[in-house]
Length: 358
Image 1 (cartoon, rainbow, N blue to C red):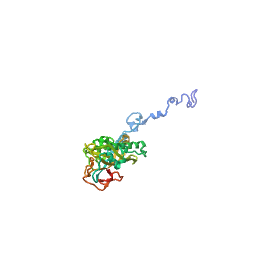
Image 2: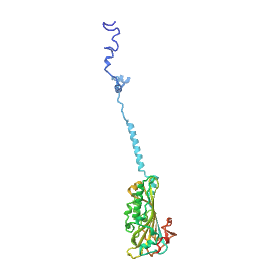
Image 3: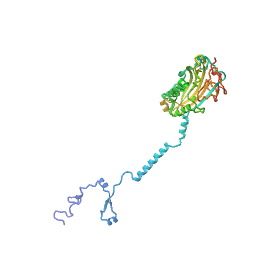
Image 4: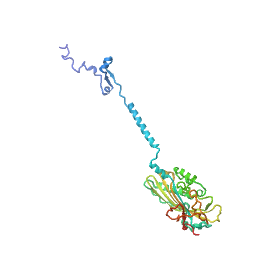
């Protein structure tokens, strides 16, 4: 029996003085449980050392382990090396090689020898009036511009800009007196992209009839030691055409005939003048950057010029035959530079109909 005032079974569970009263102030929430990282010692450890039965475990490291970090660094190093080797690869890709080849200038210059004496007259206007150039316009007016239309990848403004650049190149390379007889080249060079400057400069320093380094393919250069312009009003006629070759390039084709009235250097206005004809078919290529910079990449130039002797070095300069002169050497079948068909001979004969009838 219990004592006086106490229930027979002792104090009721949960009542005052119950066994749980001393733990009511302790709250075992989830964060407390996670923080209490305890580990029991093994039996052997408890025998060997009178240490507490449990020990605190070191906190788990968050983040990458040392091995994982090393692996990530190795992968990054390998990836960087692969990119570097791709950029610095000693062998160019086929596409890059094709692009370099396309940027190289190719030229063909065909001299046309007269069949007899070169016709002459003291009045250049009389020569023009009796030649196929009678209806040609004067100077830049003869370079007529087509209507500019947009293409799939070039706007109308870009096509118009490319056509303007080609016209400017033609004017500077075939109509500027300082280029024709003064030996100036800068007006032409500045219109070429930088990757063609080396080939252009090599053509000037070491001209050769190798299809790559003909000065007269880049520009019209007359022999200033023997001829001069008898009339600065050069006759011109021709066409321009723009087409898109692919998504990257716009191509402009120029086909023009130039007729110059010439006379011997220092002979005076009373000396007989003669006509000299140059037919140039040229192809220019533009990418979007060329259009923006107003540069024309000249890729092909096909030139017929006469009257000339077939034995001259036409790759370096043109030495026209003047009034009353005859060619020292002839050539194959007659070629008319006013016709639209293309000569195939290395040297041709200037057709009689291509010269003035005076």
